[in-house]
Length: 333
Image (cartoon, rainbow, N blue to C red; front, side, top):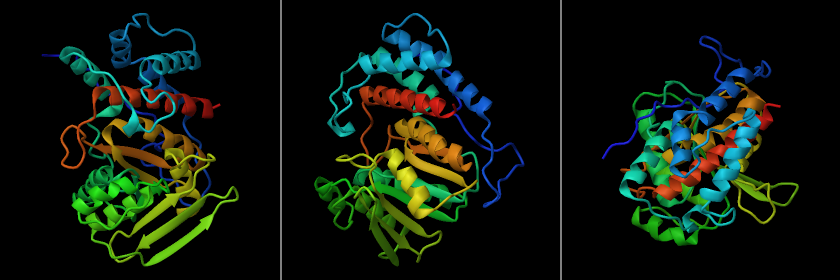
């Protein structure tokens, strides 16, 4: 059984030109907006996206301005690929199954669009590795990928785990299986897994607070390992809801690394989340602070901690990426 093999589509980046490096405190670099628009355009108009749309009956090519094409993609994905219905958590979503040939074609297109096979970073030196948060099993996979990358010679001055205060008491069964301590919140899961994988002692420094809107946060630092490990449980910006990816990135820039001008960041996540979380980081950290963002994700198709993602979940994250691309394009003005 075969499917068309599409070339890998590059994701938007604010990476400085070769040889250019922004000095901390030197002021913001001017993002190459034309290149960002070019990258968004190439993703939207890619053969992989065209084939994926055709798989679901959208045979006619997208038309109009880039803003109009993004809007059309968002509307189509809301109708066809939003298995969360804008409400439930990812693990609560109920999707559909596909025939084997259709499944292969969907996964081939998604791979080209960045939702697979982006495990090894291109660069060898970063200022900070940001391990994005999740449940215990997800965090075991992400923490191990971060540790593997560093063991293979990639250099960084810190490993920063980003989580939330979302309650996850049901995850304690997995924490016990892996020899971890109790995890009351997602932030605890991030802390316990990073400590376990990097052999860090309990926090050598802790601080906490509450935002003006009444949302709590905390930071735990583990200075006994090299590079040092820091964990942020970020506050939410949305009343009554947990902190999302954007909240944790903003929290990192405000509470853990204030004004991170021009730093090089490696984000570590799950493969199917790479493009959407990468675009969020480019929008929130690249455009605001001139950060150079690269994003990798563990291979969820063969992983000892996390079961393979069902195909409908991959389509859900294609939709997430469309929305993040749309937000990034709008942020460019």
